[in-house]
Image (cartoon, rainbow, N blue to C red):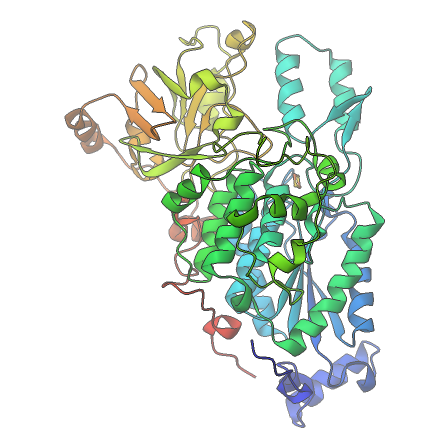
Length: 583
Ligand code: FES
């Protein structure tokens, strides 16, 4: 980025609209067909609005209205808005998992921006995978880009009880299975747990990743914490539209914003929020899109020194609406002090430090002071050992403390269907000290690494009043989930990782303080089992699934496609992805 403002002739869209040749005649005549006269767009930045709205995405219900507010801002600032719908990735509805489609949405973003006359882009997302996907695509293209976060929904409510997305679903489902609540109660929870537009309002993947986007510098300051139905959310949508027009004239691009230090800021943010474990995979993927090689070891290192300040479920007590009233993300970032690098540039043209300088905490039970954190340093732990040579993760704060150091007998399920069929059987040989193991739930095996990692506790154990057990898989877990769940085991079992070799009765050892995860059998026995292991058949022979299983990388590499990551350090992105533009 230089201080020089672009001229209209330097706009990328000039090649579509501004020159006097046969092709631009076609572009202008077809724009006239849509009812626009030349004065409405000539010489103006063309702003693509990539909208993930659809009638099956409840988290983005308000995007139909918000996009009009974004357009209003773009018109007022002298731009020309073009709304382009992209994949919706609706977390509750898309099977087997939205994660199977994250990279495809990122590709759609990249291809859409490259192939159409966009000078800048507003990215409208929020429901779990939409945020990383939109950012990954925009980073690869490297046109001026600003993110519009969907905002959390309002607190849930049932008979006066505050309900949190996901977390209370698991809680009351367990209570229903244990006979503690009635079917009628369960229906009441169903009706009250999602009361407004907006993404999940616990500290799930959505709240974590929209906050990470803000900490990275991709949203207007303060935007990520505003609840979706709040009138300030609509105001910020219009401001986002205004700002992207100036960003185009200033040529302020993702490569000016995403650096090693801004990535570290976002990781610190995720950890101080005690955010979703999914953020690890997404942060690694989007950093690598910019050539920043974020590793699990670096993540763990930051985790050891980052206090959890957000007292938000599932780790804490409150919800995102409370977090906003308590001062929101900016207040928490300010409280993190020197752990945040305030020199990093953001989309409003100021540094992160300038943006948060005036932020205040209004309720220091919701946003804790550093002298009184929710947890001092245990937001996340990266484990290694003979069961996970390339790493695995656990969120100790979401697990019962007595399980942080635990050795137990493995009870192994070979896949999800096997688990569903046997987990509640009275014949299952299991007690509360056992370790539940699920195989074939990883990036290739499931496929798409679904959020199955909060493996169910067998009903007969639940009936004893036990609410947590050690569970291990190569799956992910919803950020709204909780429990002693070891996740993202790499390499995954489907490609012959050691998790594939675990058998019923093996002893498994977890030691969170020492970051260890081992199956207590000899190297010779492991080698013998590996030699006898037979690779399973691929799950897909066609379509996105086949492409996914051919190219997806393992969890410790962010699960991006091998041909989309950018090698090398330094955070340099090539304009429009470095691919040739053809006119
Ligand atoms: Fe959309 Fe949770 S279902 S964020």
